[in-house]
Length: 119
Image (cartoon, rainbow, N blue to C red; front, side, top):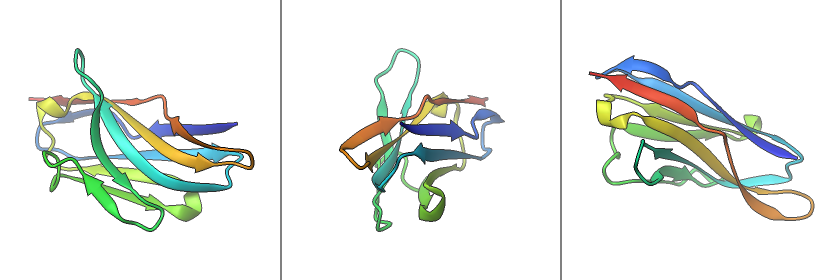
């Protein structure tokens, strides 16, 4: 059983910062790409960023410069540092990871963490 658990969401004023964490646990052989997505009310889930096991990163063009993805391989954890937050950043934030177990490789998702940015 593999689980991804996000943390670090909350309420912040516009211009503030938050750091989200997502920890993977369970019967993990290796973790390949890890990423972050978000979904605002009434909108489709939106790609934010991903990071490979080697540390290469890719960002949504609209968020590049304000959001930074990183990971700690020893802790099986991916982070999302969010700066200069805007009310339009309000959404549920999800992490995902391509995880190889002893029997297969599968994309797992976390349960989501709410981020609310007040104006």
